[in-house]
Image (tube, rainbow, N blue to C red):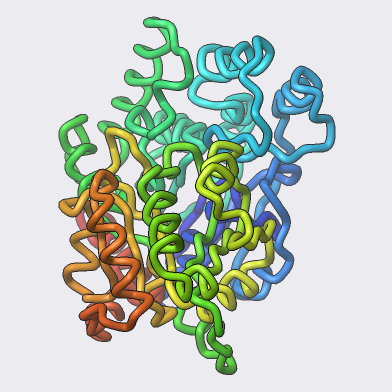
Length: 431
């Protein structure tokens, strides 16, 4: 078998969205003639733990672990959150706009470049250089964020004759919260310089979305392709799930401030006021962390009585909620990179067979996939009338949806892993 080294911060038993992409690649790589070797921290700061994910790791997998030092202990001390897990992005379940919070964001953006995992770069390059000299591999993959993983790959590339794939699950300097980091000019230049060096040094760049691929090309990546996220057919090969009796609209995953579109709440509130049956039937379900701005919007629109809030649950439970809900909501960030956002949960939405309500630009990557699969409706965030109409159609059963099964199957994890294998083999043949 060919050997592929994957450098990732997120790995089971860590849970959350960051784990899924490469866990599923690793699961299916042996079918295509690749032995996975995973390098990951032994003591990561994960958003949650999910032991159920361990079952997807094939027995051929070698897992290498080294300790990481992170400044999050001091970060939590500064914020008075000694036992709280640190999530991604800027999500706060309680309102906090004080000086301490702003100072912590400034430190994060300006002193920890590219991120707080930067202290793992040098020891990892040292450890992996020795490992690879004694245990050669055919391809090295880094996946970010955190983008410190890419700097490990960059360090190895400068020392060894490796074939290196840099996988971007999210943008670097075009991420939706980048401008919230309060960067100095010097720090901004440093972020862009490191990003450019990774993109121009890696032998191949992979992104999860079509728009991001074009953006990476514009930044200098010469060899870049899209392999989207997807769904694992085996995750859905379980017993049938009973559909909710309520008209349940479910948002799965972190509900950030930038995903909090005011017209969604206005549309729901107006429909409740105009149609007593709708108000009686409505259940708005959130599964995951909800920012305080979202909670405020729900309360201000009189929707608290319709809201079911569920904290983090194992991935198997997430899949159950996806399948039992009447409608699945994907709310695209109100940010400059909105057109390129294509979250992993969206593909599980497709596989669930439930209608999708997307809020975002119609000419976005999600709009492109929905147009191809006919699996849901996308509404512009500013279109209150269109939002009300879409929700009413989904409620009344008049939405003209006819999901295209063959188009949806293009996003199976097994098929996407085949695409990864093809890219890796092509790299080897060109050497």
